[in-house]
Image (cartoon, rainbow, N blue to C red):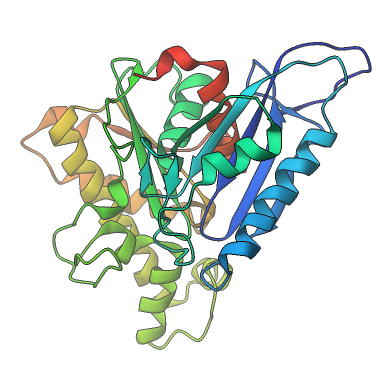
Length: 318
């Protein structure tokens, strides 16, 4: 969802920043959750990037997005969604898949760029949830989980129409919930964590141990579409893990809906089928089986829209 702005338009805007394990993006977003045409910019991040390179990428996308701001449009604030864990008290981030940043003052760095505009930081999974609740697949669902399945697996909870209380800012981080039947080692120190089983890179890595010769999630998607048995098994494995984590979450907080976005969530429609099948096995618990598992309605704009919700919809935060 994008919107073109004519000269002289003065509607207040939010600057949205999404920092993840593969890329950082920034864009201007209006009060309807629509991106301003020409304001969206992207730079790479990655496990091999240095701290200074990451800071430069953030500076580049923020500066480029601001160039697209109409002269008369007020900038209300900056919303930042970042891969976790985060530390809200100190405004720092320590993305598991970006080792150069541990306790990095991302909110402060962005505040220095924008100069005097308030900056609100939250974990990227919560931004996904807020976006879907605000203008996406979760509209009207008071109790929902938003998930991103990509380089990592993140999540965020909206309960009773508000972001779930979270002293450190990491509530809903479903990627590090351990799922039964798997013992894959995780970078967090656990084993069988959802991220270690079902993220894009880890699913491809598992497939390669079975003889798959592709190297990326895109390769796996093509192989799955062609009926490759290893690719079929890899997607089933990832989807089953997602469904088990969703079922556990639904048991804990009685969810209406789970909306899943992120690049690897689009590897194949069967990923969702396998997730739903894993939930459906909870035959004795109708309240768990009722949870709907749906794709994000916002494509790849969800993280930015959710970051903008931190500014445009502050009443959703606790």
